[in-house]
Length: 308
Image (cartoon, rainbow, N blue to C red; front, side, top):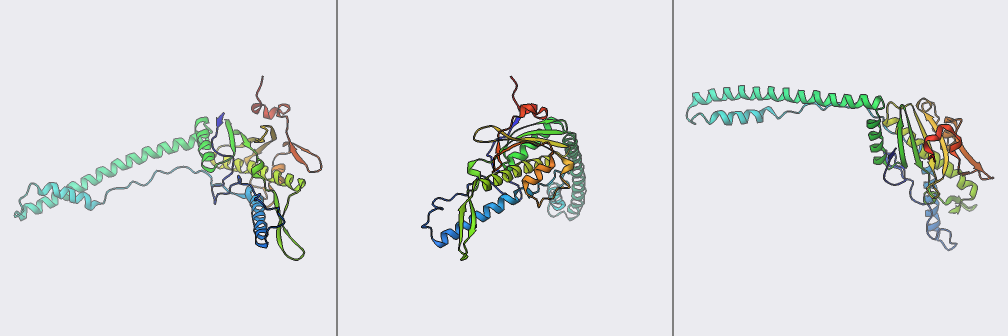
């Protein structure tokens, strides 16, 4: 099991989108807020909700087979100048015939150097390409060491909310940290009958809906990044841990072949629910708030639950 360091925010790597900051603004609920302040709260609330609703649509570039760089050689004029300097040491400055011969010898020497350097660079290039090909083959074949190293580097570089992960053949299993209290917005934008902009506190049902989407967005992003990095992976199995209590809130399996047909204009929670008909989740009450799930009752998640 590999443990990933860093924070619990999500960065897409393409115009990084982070979700650690809280929407709440000190003093935002005060009736004495000025018109400008209420308008600013409106814009901030709207920006945050739009950010969350589109977070899951981020795209990660797929890792491609590495190509060794084209060999770079020193300019021929530099080689010729060095060769002439050596050849002219043997000729007196007034010996015009000798200098002519030295210049011809210098060109021959410089051309030989250029050929030797090209041969050396081509040999180094072939060795580098062989190394890159071996790495690509290992990544494609899901070599545990290579795959885990690539995933660890990818998650660290984007600040993905991955607590730990492990590789099992063509599947990787991950523990993702769910959104915490400070990640959740507290207000929504409002407009009065008179057209005045403002912000009102979210009710419990609205908060639960946003929590669903934000949690699902994290899962979808981690899944997409895993597939983009682990080119040989066919599936990911993810559980989400609540950051404050440490309890598991969700378990889901996502297969690579299920992603191309996804309508990414749908909400993150709608997408996640359709990707795995056997998603493990518990919703309670009128708000459908997420509650802790017992993964020990589900064999597919036995590896995530400590055994006595």
